[in-house]
Amino acid sequence: MTELRQAARIARTSALYEVLQPGRLAGAGAQLGVQIFLTWCLWRALYDAVPASSGLSREQAVSYAVLATLYGRLRGPDRDVAGDTVRQHVWSGSIVYWYLRPVTPRRYHWLRAAGDQAYGLAWAAVTYAVCRALGLIGPPASAGGAALFGLTLLLGQFVLYYLLALVDVACFWTLRNFGVLAIIRLASSLFAGAIVPLWFFPGWFRAISSWLPFESSLHVPLSLYIGRIAPADAGRYLLVQVVWIVLLALALRLAWRRADQQIVVQGG
Image 1 (tube, rainbow, N blue to C red):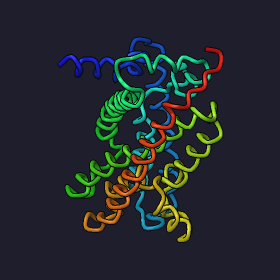
Image 2: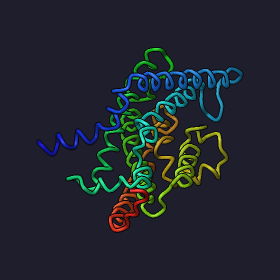
Image 3: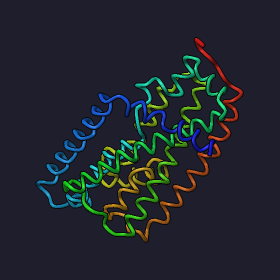
Image 4: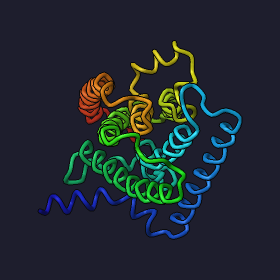
């Protein structure tokens, strides 16, 4: 029970930083609301002249786009603002305190990410309910699609966690990870279909993206939700997700072992 309370205290750190500052909380809500409104207006306007494009009806496209906007909130608070990223701790030297806690740095990192994810999920769930009530998002295409949407969304978050955790751990060698992080964020938005659904891209682009880890994090879950991917065809996508989770988890485990022996402190 003591370990559970300790884990909960660690996990809620980032959420408390935002919740206990009304200005930041209100600003986050206003920003998300504006993003959703602009996305909804843009995609409705794009479909004013045509009933469907690339096999997507206006209702499907608008639901996909609004859900993709909500997806961006799943990662939780922005730790850069609080000066609480691994990169910032390594650069300032405060990363040493991660090794003085009663939990290992690897477990501490995972608990913080899990807490951020839970907080982001709460935001997304409440906003989703509001958008459904206002008619900004349509219902799932089918019950099976809704169930697979939840499953693939969960697996996709594991893929993203391991990928971004590897970028964090790389700071033990590079000290700064701005370049790598920028590339990962761009690739994640582009190949996951966050900017534009992947059906609007050429076939060769979709073929490449189908084997990368990014597509499974966003494009696959949302495609199942709106009915573009049939539940019967979800097996291959689930397999790709599981393979990426296993590979990235093994890589991260090895990276943490090496990082424990490679601590470089600047200014600490």
